[in-house]
Length: 266
Ligand code: T3D
Image 1 (cartoon, helix red, strand yellow):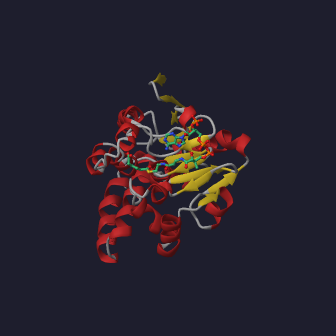
Image 2 (image 1 turned 120 degrees about the horizontal axis):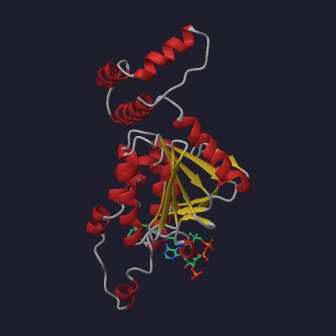
Image 3 (image 1 turned 30 degrees about the horizontal axis):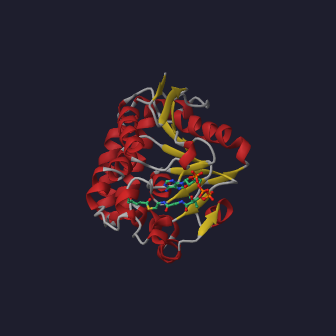
């Protein structure tokens, strides 16, 4: 299945939903249209049993340059300030949360620059496979804004508080190798093989025990914000669910039969 929106393309094959941001000229900067379309496609991917892993990338040489800074150009040129709080609540927050809440793995194939809210989009994914041309940029501070779209949540958890402060407050652009060194990305691959590598990675996840993967993600977020006792209790609740799945039974049978398991995502 393949659907073309005006700023996104989306297709599903071999258990992987491939979502491509498609505003190449503006390095896939996020305007209202693309944000609304993202919201729609994320809901579709979350509810589609044929999608067992979602892969997000950008067309052209950018992953996403963050908020489309031309959107409010008229106001800024006239010297009018614009309060952005509600725009975030109605806009980017509605695309970041569904990625985190999606009970299946989400992978970003970071093909180029990921800046501002575009970097947050990549950070919200469970894995980042980066092209050797990828760059990460907490651009917010350069335009006099605080980081948003979850960057203050994801960054300290991924790279530690000190490095998160450095990235956010200095606003230096880092390349793919530095991103790998500080733990921001899963791996760096040659640019020309990015999509093959990212697809293979996504297909491996898509052939896994989807329910356990989804609940593993949920448990990790829970564990990051709760104490050991609460977390172990929560794990027990989740295990009560995974233990009833076909994939759990299949995994144990495969072990006993000394063969590879064939998970079906149920
Ligand atoms: O407003 C709100 O909704 C509030 C929320 C804010 C959240 C945020 O995301 S704030 C941060 C917004 N993003 C930025 O500040 C990044 C701005 N862009 C850049 O600093 C640079 O473009 C990059 C470092 C990302 C890439 O540099 P480079 O040299 O590789 O490319 P370029 O030549 O600067 O950009 C290529 C084109 O994309 C260019 O258009 P042109 O001249 O070819 O017609 C450029 O204007 C356009 N572009 C890049 N970023 C944006 C953009 N157009 C609109 N919005 C952008 N963010």
